[in-house]
Image: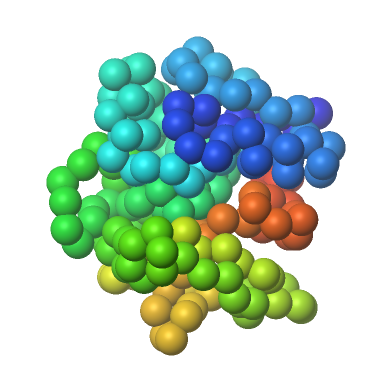
Length: 189
């Protein structure tokens, strides 16, 4: 059984749950540390990264999340999820897991009105992915163990580090399930 959690504190967790269910995963909405126990993988969705961080702190989730990630649990962080996974941001101090060796620039492409969609070439995928960027971050600095999988104008927007995948875009807002499938592949590989 492929049991995948979606951090359901804030943001577009329902859309991720639908995508994962379409791939045959049993989806658990995670709101407490106890719900992390029997997961094979986790998605940290887009939303508002400072809010996700605050709610994770209040709910006692920060250390249990770090522990499960260090134990090898595969995680996909999208948009705000990328920020939450990162070691730091360029502009603010906020609650972060610090498990992904990147520094992220929040709202790097501008405000809500500057949101956009584009076809994105991703390393390892044959056809481009239609990517939706909403108040999107980008990776300003990449650590030595981090592999850049996609870029826009030579700026990283998708990365992988061991059991972690992170995107600046929202794969859950399209019908393309390949990014979610990559997470399940990490779980099975």
